[in-house]
Image (cartoon, rainbow, N blue to C red):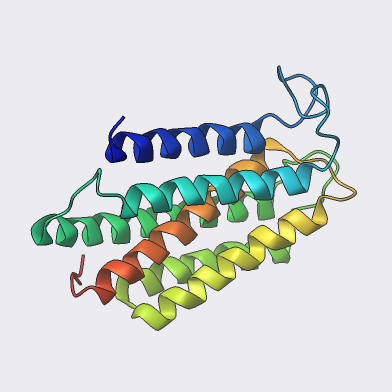
Length: 192
């Protein structure tokens, strides 16, 4: 097995295991954590899964299995910027809808807090569209704070699909902004 194939195999393994830890949490799903003896530490499993998925993405981005020329790096910067804007707007839409309707059983989301979170993501999309690297970092910290807040709030509350989906979107936003900052540092800046 060549070095590139080993890296691709490692990336695939990290992605599969990461998805397992993020998705297969509770009883109705086959091979859920409780049935195979991983206990009920669902928050830790979700965070661990997101870390593994981020590691897989980082390895894929940095690997020689996917060589990039300067022209393709400029295109990559445009794709990353558009991806980050779209992800930020998706996160905004989810939070704004939750501010209007209580869609999560057992949780009160309707109200000004979720509206403010949604407006924060709209502001994040605007920052990504017009901002500089320093401002991207603020969006990264904003998203990371919301992911960690959600993880910390799950001690007494169940992990539900809307929350997991939203946190996955936010983790992807963090990753795309981080890669965008790196590509702009390498001198491949471009504006949408």
